[in-house]
Image (cartoon, rainbow, N blue to C red):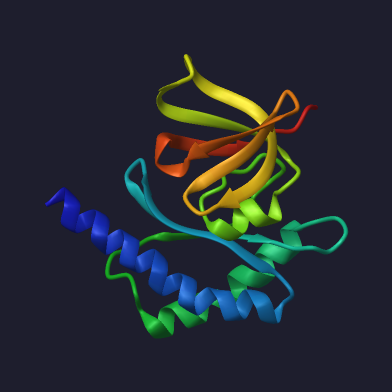
Length: 161
């Protein structure tokens, strides 16, 4: 049953992506991610938007996207159960999951967390060079290293405050 539920949630996120992406682009935003997840007792449909504009995504941008997507979701009705809709920015420190994330964030400092130790460590910090096929390419201490994407549990940008 769990697998079926996961597939349903995955399909919901993909369906919502197809609805939300053209809308986001019409406002000059980049649809960064769509998640349909359980948080406590509630189901949350989270849309994350980004922009190339100076100053990034504001609360007004999130509200604008929320107001515009809400009637489209009501019309398409991709989710049977009740849920909360959330629209946010990815922030400075963000998780990279899609190929375009790696392209956009190339040159950024990242931390890779591995499922199992690689070269004796469970995580590595470096500068993202990009993605090449099935490998994440990172410069660590001046040396280019390649890590199979399947060995990486999480790749996140890091910002030194």
